[in-house]
Length: 182
Image (cartoon, rainbow, N blue to C red; front, side, top):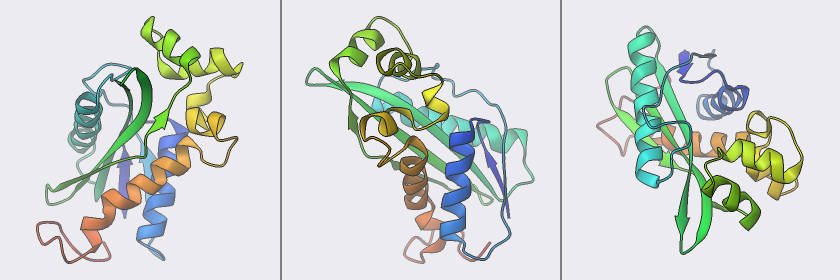
C-alpha cells in the first residue's frame, strides 16, 4: 500500500506510519512525504481554514503523486475561543476512488504567553520554542508534548486522529468509501 503524506515533517510522516499500521495490521505499507502547499498560510487561524488546509494538502498530494493508494493532509491550526488560544489539527485522507474522510483532533488550550506571541504574528511552533526555550518543537512533541510533559505528543495526537479519519475506509457502515484490506 502506497501512502503519500502532504508534508516532509517527520512528525506528520511518523503519525501516518503509525495510523496506517494500526488500521491495516499486517499490510505492507510504504509511507513517504512530499512538500505541497496548504493554500491557507503557515498558521491557519480558524477551524475552517485549518480544515481547508488539510483537504487542500491531500488533494494536492494526489495531483502530485497520482499512483498512490492514499493521500494524507495534516494541518495544525489555532483559534481564539472566549479569549483562549486553542490548538488543534485536521486530518484529511483521500482514497483512490476520490472519497475524502476528515477528522479533527482534540483541542489544546495554550498558555497566555504563547497567545501573546501568536497574536503578535508569530507562528505557533516558534512561539512555543520561545516560551518553552526549545528548538524546532513542531518537528518534535509540539505544544501537546511540551504542555503534557510528553504524555501526549503532536505525533501521537495526529496518529490517533488519522485512525479516526481512516475509519470510513475500513468500516462497511460507510458505503460511499472504498472498503477492504487495500
